[in-house]
Image (cartoon, rainbow, N blue to C red; front, top):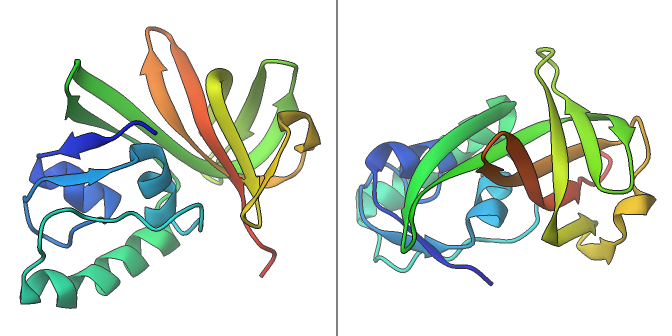
Length: 160
């Protein structure tokens, strides 16, 4: 599993991972990003010891992001240089053998190309990309690769 170090305070806040601190955090970025917007793909584990203020602020910040984040991009520093991480919540409008298209509630639409290491999760179970149907509500995370947006993680949330 790829591990990345997020250093920028804006990145940490945007992903809702370590409260308001700018301390380095080691985690699987795609899982953490989806977790931050309310999908239970995994619980990221910070490596830095949070302060008392971080512990108090974390639930409030995560709660805000879980309820309100629709889509976004953030650039993180990796061992191989900067990487643009992309997250989106929305409805599947099209699906093919190697991609799916997701439309967010604000109309923002992204065609996601399936990455070689794609994981698709439903209720914490792994499923095949072909099991995802048009009309399904999903959370998607991945990275920019030139002009393409490559999906590494697709999560179908539990019905509420």
